[in-house]
View 1 (tube, rainbow, N blue to C red):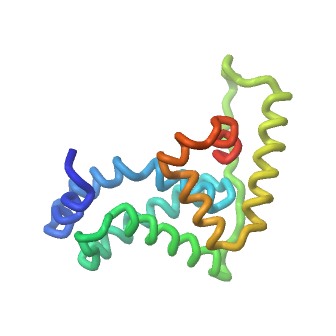
View 2: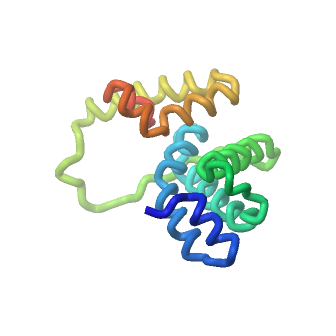
Length: 161
């Protein structure tokens, strides 16, 4: 597997397929990090993730290949989220669930859904009380693959919002 830093070097030299490879490799984890950072707003997290990759493309000439690309990418994403939160134009919206005429057969019972929603709202409320830098660090820790191996599955599912 080609390293992130090698892909970044290829991107610097104009190889756009390197960006596609980086996107494929990092999008899901970055989205998860931003999802937690935005208190479970899927649409906003997706927008911020896409914006982060656009900023990578625009700013690749400033990337120092002696440093880890993932840290640079997450720094860009964190700054994008901070800038959005600081913006006076920011509006909080909820994504509407997709409507379907059919009910999936594997839909959990309503009681289970309500219990999970209540637990998630408690986690979201706790995240909102943390100062921004602590929330970012916690979200980053939760998103890391090594953290998910150390945390009990119940905590991971609650923190997945």
